[in-house]
Amino acid sequence: GRRGSGGAKNSESAEAKNKGGGSSATKIDHVDQRIAEDVKIFATKFAHLYGHSFKPILEFAMIITSTLRDLGPWRPFALFAIIGMMQDFFRKISPNISKMIRAEQAAEGSFRQAHSRLRENAEAVAFLQGAKAEEEILNQNF
Image (cartoon, rainbow, N blue to C red):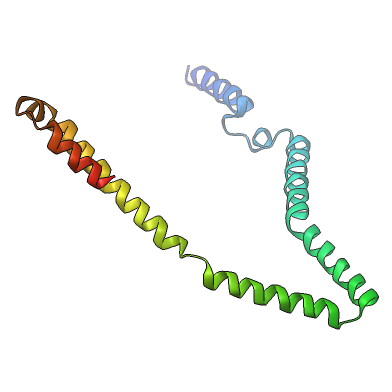
């Protein structure tokens, strides 16, 4: 009797293993499809990387090489120097964008806080007829 009941359990566990429950042979199925998918993903990402980094660097190097060959070394370097000087000039005369963004965000924050305060106290403002005073507060924050 012991052997018969154990045999049923063994056949059930064998079926579970065949369905992917524990056999190492069934855990790795469709390896060729997985490899093909990995190669496809790699090729797509490499093409994107090539198109956005390697290709522009290669094109820049080829243009510089042909320019140096055709015009000599001084003209391209003079152009780079002019571009560098213009960049420095415009950096000095342009406003500090980060300070402007910081000020804008602070103004928006205070306006939102005042607006939120008004929403929370809307009933009291209406009852006490303080709409004009609240409007002035909001306009000062905006």
